[in-house]
Amino acid sequence: MARARIPLPILVLIAFLLTATAGQAQSVPTSPQYPSTANPSLSQIQIDALGWLQGLLRIDTTNPPGNELVAAKYIAAILTKEGIPSEIFESTPGRGFIVARLSSGSLPDSSRALLLMAHLDVVGVDKSKWTEDPFAATIKDGYLYGRGAVDDKGMLAANLAVFIELKRSGAHLNRDVIFLAEGDEEAYGTTGMLFAVDKHWDKIAAGYAINEGGGVFLTGGKPQYIGVQVSEKVPANVDVIAKGTSGHASMPRKDNPVVHLSAAIEKIGNYEAPVQFNSITRAYFQALAPLQDEETAKWMRSLDTSDRGEHAARVISNQSPAWNAMLHDTATPTVLRAGIRANVIPSEARATINVRLLPGNQLAPLLAKLQQLVSDPAIQFEPQLPLSETAPSSSLTSDFYNTITRVTAKSYPGAPVVPLMSTYFTDSTPLRLRNVQAYGLIPFPLNDDDMSRFHADNERIPLDSFHKGIEFLFAIVNDFSVTK
Ligand SMILES: [Zn+2]
Image (tube, rainbow, N blue to C red; front, side):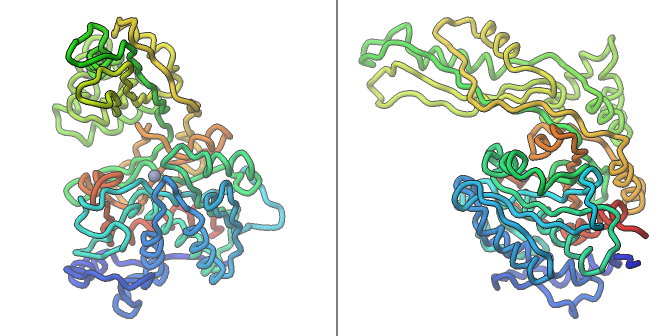
């Protein structure tokens, strides 16, 4: 009976990272930053994982077009070297997913299986705004830079490391552990997760999953809480269209669609939907209140009261865009399109609003409300298809959630586990629609600055967080899947 563990004296690691990586930049393809002999406190798998992450960051999987299969093949080669067979499924040329399995026995029970999942694609970059090449995987001052360092290749490399460590250590599994790296997450998953779920469910069927979303939230260098994403808001894009008569700009017209659209967008942008709670946001604010200053805590605790709730929601919403978005449906104008020449009045002007609905809410009533608010017959609302579905929340009492809570208490004593409803969507939705208990937990301790960089310029992951994240994720998976 093998028992797998990653020993890691944290302090030695931090001291090492502070001294050894300061000011260093490197660009050697796929080689890890330091040899194992340089830092005995790092386990071999942590050293290997950094090299794999660098390799993944150097493969440009910007979506569109994605080209995820280049990265999938890179992973397949790593797995082959470890003696683990994998399968790649192509949805459209160059796109799809890779899956591999460590079996617990000859009779697989998918209801017990654990799925480790992450996505291969990344969002685009504005290279001119980056201080480092976003696809060079440069290490500098203790950080690894690259598009996808946090979202989501960091987690991908951590999943891969945990998966391979289970194999290397000969762990005695009590459930199947499945590794999945899919694509197209950043564009609704049609050629990635939806393809995997619809066409190859037998390959990934599981009772439990761990995915991106959530995280280990650092404040003042200390883990303040561990957010576990169990639910998510539902996205929809809606075009707002103004129609009028085209003509010469020297003779302005009352039905100029640019003017009508502008007025409509101003009203939509300032609209505030009613405050709504669900069991997850209730639990979230309850768990978060004790970690706040007295004043914020007071208003957080008042959120769900009849007498002070309204004022409390205003105070809390004004403190943080994320909290605001957790309490309301939102409709955010993001794109404007109108006009072809300075001297031509166009016959049409268009905007796109990005809607995020609280789970269970429907789009139609919100659009009816906006239509009423805009109150202009020249304006039409046109939802873009496909519309997403609401999935049930993952359970806060499942075996896996209990494992996460138990391991967190050991790894981060004093930092509570807080259930989250994310304001963004993830590939956990199609899993939850199939009754998988999917949990979002990016395992790396990250502060606000680190978090603010994904989908933004200069995305990077602190090296010590990457290594700690692997250790934390391994502890969770090991506790849940390995017979001691
Ligand atoms: Zn992501």
